[in-house]
Image 1 (cartoon, rainbow, N blue to C red):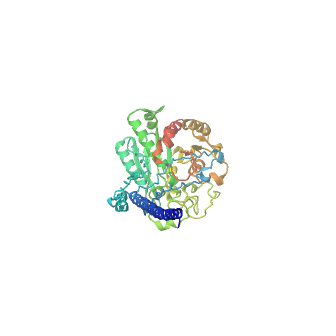
Image 2 (cartoon, rainbow, N blue to C red):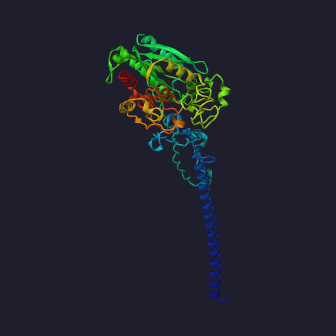
Image 3 (cartoon, one colour):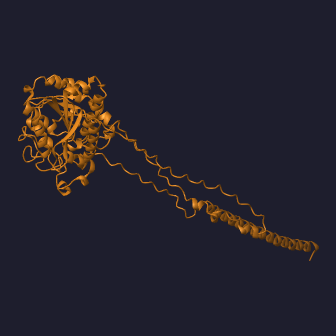
Length: 475
């Protein structure tokens, strides 16, 4: 073998050795690379798991349950005046809707504070895989603490209105009951014995005394009555408030408005029957628990949805459809005992009506007024008697000017105006008698909010009794 051949062979052997060493180096590099990749992946997974556990999100339900929002009971509406009170045309009825702004509460619930504060859920050490490999461990940054959810703010409750305190004995700012009326009348008689006296003119179906208040010392007499219809009991509190105020001004010898109260009550006596229908009023304001024969009442037709809208007496007879004045012609769309509109089997069958008729026949009343609600209106004449009662139209115009109430047209049909107290009084005595609707029409049969008595009634109607006494002195 030549020298050159030997050298070439030696180079090839050396090259093979170098390639083997290079191959081993490359294998080592590959192994180290794979190991590094695995190590980095393991570290990342460990950090992710710990981060998730630290934030308290693992297995935690983050959905919020909405808070329940109570619904207001919807109002109930309906026609107010029946035929006995000569309905005003629809165009003249002015409903007064009342709106109320309701704020809905925040429905987000607070988070689970116990889970966030549990020490077992705090971050642990960095992954041990890095320490075992002999490499310098990379510190795991602590995650930002999850903010505590704020507590759900409770809706600000609407404060209950402060009760209005009466200025004297009579409190007209509440649901007015028979018992309250009787107690207040006793106190008024004790306070004003020189000008005021009380007695009973008869009994209701359930035996309650029908109260009569005599206010004044004069020989001339006028009659004022309220609450023929049970749900219109605000007429009772009105007449009681009137009684107290007139007695007070008389005793203090002061004018009330432009009226000389002492002079009027020295010449005219007001006969006041505040509550013709005490059984019905108590049913409206106290419910069935106030009724002596609950089963009988429950068996009667309920024309409106609730007993708060009850209008009849406790026998289910509408007292202002009971008087013997065109009773046979009076329209009756019920035909049986009911919460309203039933005129009975004959005229004047009910004890409350009999008591009012006897009182009217036993006294020489110059004029009369029966108070009702709603409408801010004055019914003053019907076709059957309008031409037989002198000077009543001019008087009505003055009353309308005083109260700002609407003077209604002459009632034309006996089927509509018949059998009411004022219509019977006109027919029987040929003297003025008024049906006065004290309050605004508001498109519902539910009684008014009594706390608004001054605005609803008193501000416009405070002088009516004195006005009528003054008119009686002129006749």
